[in-house]
Image (cartoon, rainbow, N blue to C red; front, side, top):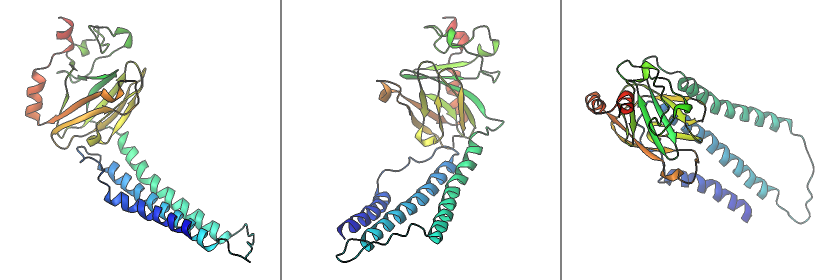
Length: 264
């Protein structure tokens, strides 16, 4: 009897803790409401399944507890129960997969008017590159990385001469404009993550990965590394400032291009 009560307390206590917990998502600052909705659906489905399974286990412990003079009767098959459990499990799995697949389809479909920017991770700092007046990013190569060219930009590529290079500063973005974030890591695995934007992706050395989002409100948001990248991992912090178009353009005018940095 005591074990059955403990199991019920665990199930109900978990639900109460979830509803009363002070820990929750930060207020969203991007278009990815779909991600929040998918997580909420998953919470409901897995929560109901958890309570049902633990409740059923508590009932079994109580119903089939040892009592003097009683003996268990082995009945390994119950087709009705098996069919019911199979159908319920299939429905639950489909209910969790369908929203995720829908969001993934949106996640990998970048809007045609998205502006490409680049985030480069290295132990233990972030660097950024924005397209210049031509609207295109130049090419890069890890073999070109040096003290004077930390992002490894190709000096022979004219498209990269006007690229805006941002180091030791926040990444600035205009509000309401979709952004495709190209991700490069020059040493180990990193992950550029801004909790308010929800979307993120691993940065893999030797590859260029990406994700996209649209900032929907202004403000400064902390960026962090969501992969264990070394002893200085907790200190790999940065910031993203989402501004109005006028504020963004004023900030952009004060930044240096790759050509200007190379000429120093």
